[in-house]
Image (cartoon, rainbow, N blue to C red):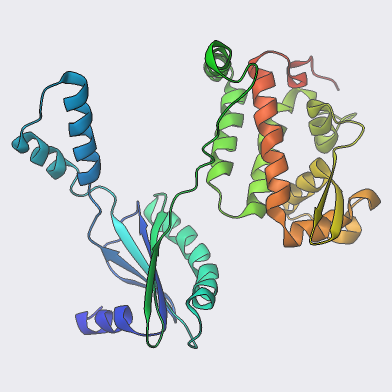
Amino acid sequence: MKEEYLQEILQSRPTVHELYYGAFIQETLRINENLFAIPLKPLGFQAQSEYLEQYSAQIAKIAVDQDSLNNLITQGGNAFPVIALVFRNSTDTSPELLEKEAREEFKKAIKVLSWATGDEISPFGVFTLTKDQSYFRLSLPHSNKRIRLGFGNTGPDFENQIKSILAAIEKDEHFEFGISMYHDALKESNPKFQIARFFCCLECLAHKIIGKKRPTRKAVKYLLGLEDGAFSEIHIDGQKYRYDTVEIAGRIRDKLFHGVKFAKSDLISEARTAFELYENYPEQIASTMKSYCEMELARWANGTSRGLEVPIE
């Protein structure tokens, strides 16, 4: 792509630019009529090199000389390659609406680029140009910053739980695969896809107890001790939603993995309000499924999971 045309893309208005690190492309790509992927200079590892130098100095009480620090920085010079996704908006409006329009295009593009590069891609900043103004902000990574309080959640008790999970990973391939799927689900940005991934984690842990008498969704409910129903109830904007979490999560998994039709009429009567919740607030269902996975992984590691029972027909 010619340099002058590239500059035209980068400087045109209105546009939304999102910068990502982690994947390398060797040339500018025109993904569609209004969306471009442009390779930029790598972030490098300077901040990490300086952090390591400071850590070393504080722990070993020996200052790292500048030549050694420069060598570290040089070693990491090509780390974190950067891609700018640039979306040319059709009409000028507020930066929030411009970004909202671009967001749907970016979500699809990063999946395509992950396939093309074989790398995971992470955002770190957004730059938006309206006709007359420019705006920028960081895309800060989310952290739960979980603080554990109460009996069994700190000190030796918690350390023993960590050791139990590590031992289960080393001992049992199914458990390791299950916690790997949980790990992957945490990185998923689409909450509807997250629901399916969390269900697959539980399905993996229930593999011994799935059978003719206890098909998958029933087995997952039994695994969780919810064979009499896995109902949750929440109120959002004055609307009450009562839903069977495992029932709807299992159907979402069937839809996404096997192409099974999923509509409001397909759900059991007690779970039909969940369809509206799934369409409008899927993160609520994903959050509940995440909690189920955390609980069951801990049970399995402690040897108390129903998934460890003798298989049935």
